[in-house]
Image (cartoon, rainbow, N blue to C red; front, side, top):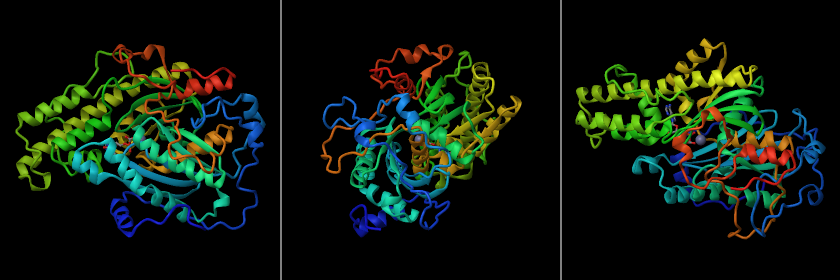
Length: 478
Ligand code: KG4
Ligand code: ZN
């Protein structure tokens, strides 16, 4: 296969090796001649995909195609799509190639853990540079490992939001460059939808509707997934997400952040007494499904100060007494952080069953859902309600390219994609990036005053855009 991107210098390759977090090739198969052409039979681009009324170079994702067009192109579930997925919304640069059968042909993730460890959080400008440094090689490696010829790719899927716009831009530019050169359609993906939908790759039995708890560094969502692209947001966080609380607690306890804070807290918590510190469970008085982690974070910080724990002394050099005190805080924090999840999930299950009595699964996904304690506690909640818990494996819970490629498969099948970008798109083309992009419409009972006070500009939700396009209505505007 001819190289899709210029070869990177050996210094960068070396750096990439160091950065590799989970490079997992779940299934790598050499392709023989395929019986069915892997490129789906698309209606002619000119007639089927008139670029909507975007100004020149305003790149649109999710073309506002009517239900009629979608019906003309109903790709069945035994189709043979091969999609490259690219993810750069936060601090991981990831790419993967996935077949519509669910077969993962390759998966590559380069993490910015070294930057995270140094700065204790994601610094957008530095994260952008780190993505830009490795994106070519990550994508190339995903394509190489998949052992595909360029002609076998069906489409390119890429995260367009939510996330840091500087970071999103790196992935979107790369995706459009490849799609333009190979004349491939492009699917703009919602990062949080991808966290939820990857569960359908893992478990083929998972049908809509299902309930999803999506827990990561920046999001804490409870959504009822009624259908593809149709989500009701039952709850979200009014301030911080649980992953942020894990990361800050880890930083303040002087833990090794190179694998991010969550795993470090999970590990240390095994040594501690979860009853040692009595943190208050957030939002007890709120009879809704919303979350808040800023207060718990603050309680942890005050406790660390009160116990004179010095984060400058890394845990590896702490005395055994000091280590024990840190472990107690880690365990007590984790217990309360997860109790908050449990309480809100219990209510969300009740709400979800009221709206859709056929719900059978709670999907838990996003980085924090790779935590074993979180999984076991959530399992108890779902069992009490005669539901089943479905958690993707950890490598598919944390940010990855597979979930983006798979979401690309799901939307492509129903005809939701954009035409190939021009091969020579200018570098400064205005891109459709959606840094603040809700997944669904808020459930009326779940509306939080705290959040509706916020004035920040946000994009119309994925659900409202898709519902409007299905009804042939103009797209909702901000
Ligand atoms: O989904 P993700 O990879 O990226 C975002 O979209 O934010 O989630 C990253 C978050 C980080 O806050 C990280 O500390 C947390 O997931 N995380 C964990 C664990 N693994 C990752 N939190 C708790 N326990 C874990 N084992
Ligand atoms: Zn994520």
